[in-house]
Length: 461
Image (cartoon, rainbow, N blue to C red):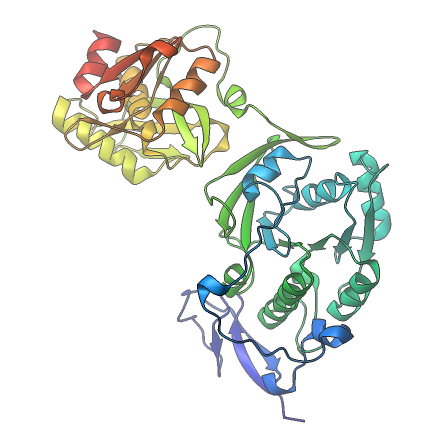
């Protein structure tokens, strides 16, 4: 048997070094190197292959011409959770490996257990390395969805025993909570180390592809919000989902960061309740506050997340700076883009914003990257500076250029239809989007604008 050797791995990014280093050359983090024993690959036997007698032999793959490959479109598994289906791109793909990350206490385990209990027609194997069977049973009682569920619970951390149980149960879906607690006998290092996380994920990947069983992996995250373990972990899996939100608020956002089987810009919104997570089918209503009277500095923007239109509230506060340097702060919006829009207002239209503090907030806890909310941001800023409330029955959709022009945005029909559905009476849109647009089929007033002067003239006179 070949001798084992030791190497030093960065616990942040997985960089390997033959000796200890103070700073990682890859991620520039300090004091993250840990020594681990590495077994040569020639002496390692894949754990999944060693427990499956039918696949013990190595399969010889041969190259094939692409037009000779037989392709049969596989049927996705549709879950009762519509938000989860949307984020995955239409349902669970057989044989896929999905990684779900999020902060501690955000609800990852609740989401996965709720998914396992909500599919009575499928056999689900829920594997937990962090909780006992009694704790999972208590959570299932709270979710009150286990009466018809065909869900098997396994508290195990050894991958060898997990694959033996999977071969005996023959599940349709496997859930691992969490990948940092598993350990493989092929690696002589502690659970949660870079080598163990990489090896356990590779074994689960082989199991998913060879048995055509979808596997969901729950992963911890680091202080900076990235998924713990080596970066290669995100490259190995098919889909990476991020479960976001504030533990002090009730709303949670499930966002697709990577998806090989669908769009990577979709999101699902949930509400955390005492009985579990509830789907929010119309998130626009919860992101727009119901105000009794008009307030300055508030504008409603029509944005898109993937193919999903959303109405969000943009809040701005502009005041005189008490210090020499004015403050620029934004929550949920790119600060550099905010500075660019403020420079356009000062250079092109003479607004004295360089001596004033500007605070911007996107309600609902969303992080917005759609440039179509530029027009709403500018309208909210000018409304706060002039202390003139905007009409509550209008919304905005438009990108602002450096010369003050309103640039066209994509999927304008979906944005208009969403605004009309929520009862808005008018929407400001770029005039370049009116080509081929039939305004008669909408019961909402379309206000095409080409420059910011047209918007200011219509709103403030």
